Image (cartoon, rainbow, N blue to C red):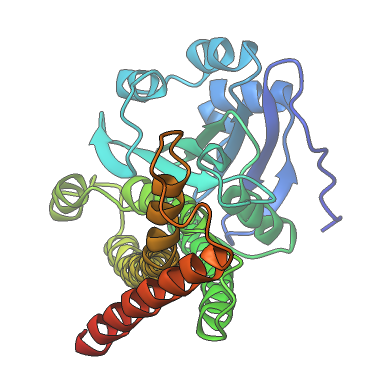
Length: 340
């Protein structure tokens, strides 16, 4: 078989790439929008065990128009494209699997805007996926197809995508753990170069990832209990296993969030302790300066009868009085400090 050549970027119909899979599960050829249209419209061309995967760019306004004209997808698929809720889920509609999968963009930098959605429709012989921005997991799946990996069915393609999504999330968790380790090391060394706000921003993104990427248990339970008739038992088991593996990754993500929370509390405690020390030093300075301020204020009043104003040693007498009261105030502060 000749190597499959496929260009990245959508054509005028919005198709980014298309593949036809043969009975052996490997990609037999790449399809453009014209070939995909012919394959979709002529069931006689479809060999036994063959299916196609068409991936569209929804940023191209022609994509949805092409799908409505040629793909014959369930109405629920188009409804999910415009719904506000984008939580990860897999549902059954008109004997077709409708999946909403959240993924991260290339160059993920722990920003909430780096999370986007992939919509998928899976039938026995047609897999349609659509997104608005390039995503990591679906790109991994494309590379696997180009490398000759075999997929026994259209559901196996979806299962592989879910596992690719879990692998992407594992990498994100590893990067986050590395960043948290660095922050923890600097904190233990007494160098607080990171603020609570930095950890807070990372924690918010991780919470958003967990909320969007965690599959909806109810929808998945209904699907696994009543799968479509064309879906093989092995595919059902593989789908169940992939979701269980994904749950383990989400558990690690939850543990990391708790660790970040503890670090935030530790940083807050240290900041409060430093503020307490600074306030204590300021209090000591204020108390020690209190005698000289009071005496200077009294002696500086522009009235008659100021004591020692004509005495030759008046300055030294007043200085001795100030030092005596200051020493007394210092002794009181030290005694209170020992009692704490």
